[in-house]
Length: 128
Image 1: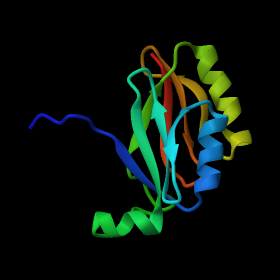
Image 2: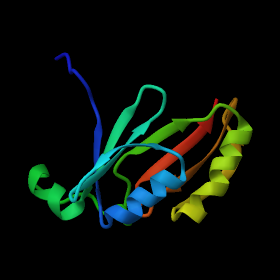
Image 3: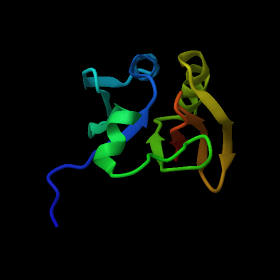
């Protein structure tokens, strides 16, 4: 199999809230409609589409995971420095997200934290 491109699709409750959150964190918009809002992540422009949950489920042929009850997938965002990690950690809550952990050193040469967006989708932010 040789995919042309890969991207992620997440279910959300409120497109306006989701758009505001990711714009506040500085991610580049990839378009929006009445069904989804979409953003580019990282230098390679990885795309995450955020669909209204009730519109995504029929295409998925089942329910979308309850992010409040468990983990679906955790994306890792690579930071350029410890200072950038700390700055991002300070920006998450004012934008509407939740810090799951504060920035900390762990393992050998790792520094980072975990946050969720307003719908509970988890992200790691690491400097390695």
